[in-house]
Length: 347
Image 1 (cartoon, rainbow, N blue to C red):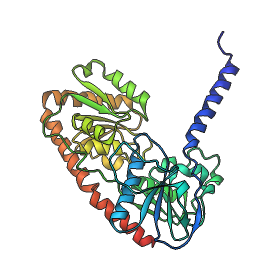
Image 2 (image 1 turned 90 degrees about the vertical axis):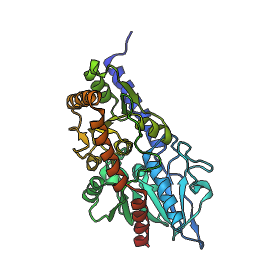
Image 3 (image 1 turned 120 degrees about the vertical axis):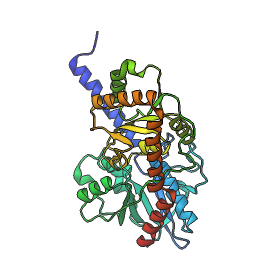
Image 4 (image 1 turned 45 degrees about the horizontal axis):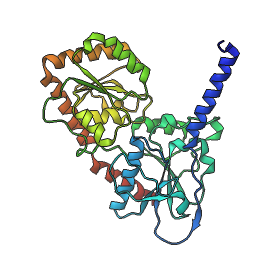
């Protein structure tokens, strides 16, 4: 016999509670010991022990590298001793929270994902929020009164969209934008014309991805659909290089690294910007689609697939212009200058 409607509701609530408990497990900050004295002031970027590929964590590591290269002491502060991300190459300085002791002269940089537990942060080091996706600011927070950014000296974010969100949500908060950077040695166009391959990263909108592909139906005959999931940075770059077209499936993004990396790799991007990615979608070399309009996305892709089959050079030329713009605007050099300038001004 099946469950009654009451039983189904109960099972659903239980599943939701278990899902939230799992989500909160890595959002709670570790115990951060304070009271150290003397020594060189250090910028610590708090970072979850999260093993799956994440553009936000990659950026935390890069900020720390920038500061150390510039002669300023910095480290990634993971929850556990000995933990480090393994899905991209790095030689970043890492410290485990159990082995660290922070002083009042240090800076603790806190990602927005710790929002439900901000009250557990120590007050002795200077606090900066690094909010890479403003749409996550209130996620799993039980009430508006339970979250306040008043404890932060300043805020860093990665797009004008997120900056506007934070300034509206927390009036008086000092918000600075440091653009993401796309490494041109990792993400770059292939010299040859790629095969007929449609790349996508379906994690955030799997149902929309499924509908779009089903709508395309026989129009995908002769095309390989290449979902990119749980791939390393180098594996992702290789797949994007080998794909002339990318289906963007952004959902309330702080910026939109997937389409940026795809464009840097020479892809023509079609799809949803996720709001934070709107600055990426120049109609001269990409096609933004109204959020959630799966039919419009399928129609645009159908035209683009057909155009690539007939005139691949036209699509590739647009992809080359996209790569050039990404390379210029989201360069490692510009990011490094902005990171150093932020901390110089912070003091």
